[in-house]
Length: 259
Image 1 (cartoon, rainbow, N blue to C red):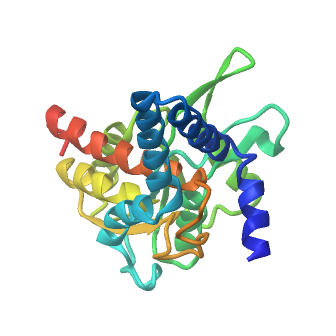
Image 2 (cartoon, one colour):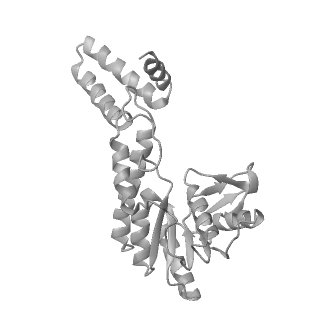
């Protein structure tokens, strides 16, 4: 009990917890002053924050996306002509090795390299964006390719898709590569929550794909914090943002005819 109280006090120092606390205090102050509308407003906002930050609801929403292409063994896949790692694994950094900062979705490139290392793909294709770095345009997949080559992780030929803006652009460029090289089947690696939109986009581009999700954000794969907490925390907001981003992304892609 004392331990839970201690952690609750620590959580109050986080921005979400602190805002929630101020809303609770505000609700009490307004109620004492009989300013009922203001008090109700504070209670409603604090309640919404609690639902998002103190319950497993956001995680359950993300699980709906992650479980669609879940594999019990990610390496139990057929040998394919290529494995594609979608962008988002790294970004440029002035003071990190190879000028690369591995991002929260860095699992993508690690999974793709591991698949190539295990002989599940004959080629490795890297996607990603372009960034201005010290006034010079740096291409994420080119930098990752150089990093893998320098570290002698180039178990198979590596292809860069160049700078792309989104998953649709990546799918079109992979389709061109497949046509040029006569590739028949391709492994696609991306975050599990992003896989439903990715799979639909690559299939729309005419590609025969095998999906290998990674970068799980929920208890489907990883140990997550306690589902219920008294003081709301930021993790629920991160998961809700992921879910909303993917739902809106699906809607946008449908409107454009990309899926």
